[in-house]
Length: 594
Ligand code: ZN
Image 1 (tube, rainbow, N blue to C red):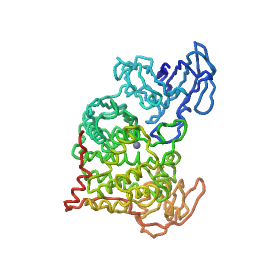
Image 2: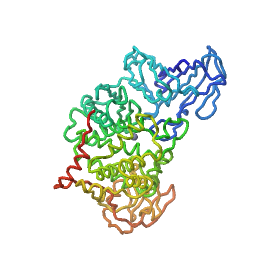
Image 3: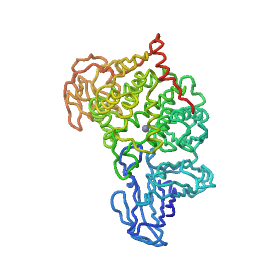
Image 4: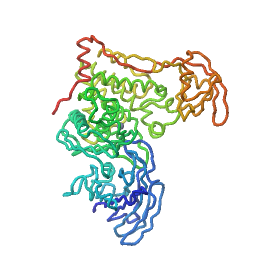
């Protein structure tokens, strides 16, 4: 069968419209069905991309063919013997890594937002012609994507690209515009970074630092790297943050202030740049852990509905563990700086009462409706499979090291995952990690992991870090007594954004959304609340006036002790030689180059 032929044109940048056509040489004789995904892999939420298809029509042999919409994301063309073309226009005005965007400054799209899937022919090879928008002002636009170029055509250019099937077609996002680009090699594999948006980044510095991360990770899983080339697609804005992994690229959204400049110090990276490198490291690690080592539920993806797995804690949590660990192991940050970052993760989990309500397995399974659809009750009901998953990875790593006198570690487990599931393309069964842990670390550790993942007990971090000469201490993050709620300022007004279960605000009958008016009959404002709190002790009772919608509430709130939810990690000044060795193996071990 001939390939499916796609064409995409930014037809009207000011109206944020792409026109996409899809020609099927041999359409289904019963009437060809086309569909658009409802979600994009890596972002576990049904987003209904078809809502942005503005117009759709079909034609064959120069004549219109009736097109019938079957449901929210499927269309069926009337039966025809001739080559059938579907043409639609897609509205693209969402500046995120998950969807599509177009204006006169640049275009970005994920295939899942724009390319129809030809039902029954998803395995067919695809050719996609990416066309330049009409108009002289677009004359210097280029393309950044890891879609394969047709033979004999240059990288970075408009024109024909190709993919082996629909799954590959939609796993290579495309950027077009006048981005800044820098190429580098990691372990012999061509890499590039393309940055869109106004920025003054030191690209050479960024490329040098990324090269270290990429080479460390390629060697971690073992050469050769599983991709022929790799691309960091970065959109720099005022205050953006986000990333989405793909098989040979990542789409990132960051603040332009996170990017390094000529003045960015080398000895201690500022938190902003460290955060950006951590994000790059995270998405790059996914090249192996989730794009190739996958839950069985994702092999293959079903893009028409939710794909349920209880394993996201392993794919996002382990990736979150290694993203920062990679930075210290490849020498971009110091062990002391790494421990600061780790302490922040510990604090984040500790500040979430939902950790005592939802397990990691449940958080993974319910990601579609809970972690990805956060609301005012999320901290009470949900635990993050990123942060608690990363701490679980740390506990597993430390226990594997301790029980094998440093012979084995989580690295051993990742290597086994890569060989058995990544290189073979076999999906990881839901119980597969418990079995593999038992195999590498013994049945007791396998059982420990299952209990940690399926239960809600706090992790034994203090006990596990001690043998490495690292002590974990908890202190209060605020010197003020606690309201048991988070507040958000709207202008001068103070609103309760989140009210913690059984905390002082909830016991006083206050709820998220209530606007705080008066404290012992003094007005509460954005600037006065902390001053009012500072005049009190835990246990004091305060008269509170608040509005719920337009109704006045009067209540008495009894202040509580500030929770000890801020972690700090300290290294013993005189650690034993054994502790020092364990610490060095953990934070300073470099993988063997094969
Ligand atoms: Zn991730």
